[in-house]
Amino acid sequence: MASTLNPQVQEYLHGLSEQGLPPLYRLSLAEARETYRDLSVPDEPPESVRSVTDRTVPGPDGDIPVRVYRPTADGPRPALAFFHGGGWMLGGLETHDALCRALTNATDCVVVAVDYRLAPEHRFPDGLEDCYAATQWLAANAAEIGATPGALAVAGDSAGATLALGVSLLARDRDGPAIDYQVLAYPPAEFAFETDSYEENAQGYFLTRKDMERFWNGYVRSELDGNHPYAAPLQAERLDGLPPTFLLTCGFDPLRDDGRALADRLDAAGVPTRLVQYDDMIHGFLTMLADPELDRAREAIDDIGDAVRSELG
Image (cartoon, rainbow, N blue to C red):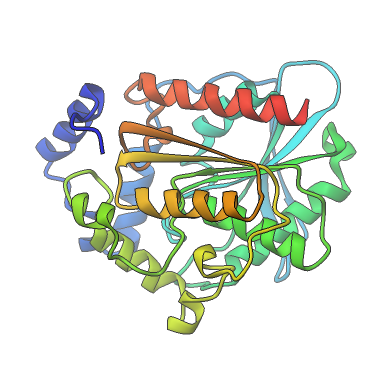
């Protein structure tokens, strides 16, 4: 782990401390959702894209809200299904709007953000099945939203990254849509809390070990669910046959070692995998893009954009 936390992040955490903000795990579900939204929705105007359209797509238990972002370039562009973070319990289209706009411009993709059902009201696998259904719809209806048929990536941050990988596993196992690339930003990959990074970063860097214990216990119904490979991908017997992968981790993150272990497993399975660690960053830094303006978030989004454009043309 890096010995020094990024100065901009230090300032951000100091500001949270001065506000007296309690850890998320101490808040009620409604309070945690409101706090997460307040922290994630920037005060500044969001980045411009060609168009933003809210609509629904068919899901396993009713329609699923999605938000479609079109890049400024003319003509069809590859499609990218995006699944937001928030411990499977928090977040939505608004909390990740700024990030999705930035990703739209950086990747030159038509980004479709999926407002999947949240835990604990809807536990595993409900949210995952929503994400998979939306990805199926996107693959079958790309032209309808100005995307290029047959050029498809999935992406997510935190719990959304685990959902993205789950979608890739489902697509492989169900002979579903061909997914050409996946972007996994600081994913939780195992229903366990004993790694070195969980010990080193248990508290003090926004996401805490107790937060993750709450999130996992709200998401899965039982230890059996927690050991299911579609929920905890490090439990998968095989990770071959998955799309080439960009995997991002942070030095000051309880989930750092989950991401590293996942990268090792993907690499061993023959999946082309690029692991990029931002040693001086904390979990969730991508959504700190605009408020405050975090330079390292912009760098990471540019890295993701370069990787996606290189892979999808």
